[in-house]
Amino acid sequence: MYKRQAKCDVLVENFKVGGLAAYGLDYPSLKALNPRLIYCSITGFGQDGPYAKRAGYDFMVQGLGGLMSLTGRSEEEAGAGPMKVGVALTDILTGLSAVIGILAALNHRQESGVGQHVDLALLDVQVACLANQAMNYLTTGVAPKRLGNAHPNIVPYQDFPTADGDFILAVGNDSQFRKFCEVAGCPELGTDVRFATNKARVANREVLVPLLRQTTVFKSTAQWIELLEQAGVPCGPINNLEQVFADPQVKARGLRLDLPHALGCLAPQVASPIRLSATPVEYRQAPPLLGQHTEQVLQSLLGMSAEQISELRCAGVL
Image (cartoon, rainbow, N blue to C red; front, side, top):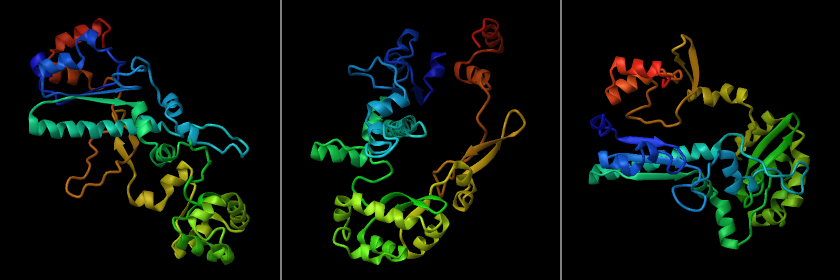
């Protein structure tokens, strides 16, 4: 059995810190059997520090790691308060970071011949992904506040109401702002000293944004997008998921696919966003049923016989 374990390249686990030692499956134990093993641990708070023994979940780490303090309507608006992101973003980003760490460790092993322990924590990843907001605090000492959908350093860069809903206006420079003002029929705003530069617009956002909202409500979302795209001003709709998967660009990129499932039906999936020109992603099978490959893994990886597997099943282990 140990010889077979020594053939493994990567092990990924998300038990609490120290939880696998009782089974001899901690990193030091497995390293002794297979020095080439890449052992990736994903926990809430990492392998050390005062919180290491705590359980960690995406929602609580979004709060602890500062993301919720930045997400939600500002204190000046109705419905103000912290808000979690609509998907388990910290979990997802931690998984992506784990992949990067594993690939780096594999590259090191190719040169050195030895594996290593990759330590990933939800909290570490969340703090690392605070991006410009982290630097806003670290360089000024002032904690950023919630701005709803607005950007702390760029104006206008947020949602605006239209005649039939809302759309996103993402003005990235002064030239784009002047183009927007021309399309919106208020060219005077583009040359107003209070709004002519992004620095001025940030300082006067409380004056500018209401003026723009009074303008955007007179056209539909589709009209704004058509006009602004022609003028080269970044903008877009706010789609629900039905609209997302009906979007012509999403369809053209093949982001939905259907794979044959073990139950005899087709299982809808979201395609990988990675496009490789020489080695494109292959979609070999749909997500398996619970336990679908248990016997195959026990036989191929641990060398167990059909009789041994049957005994485990009779004992209620499987």
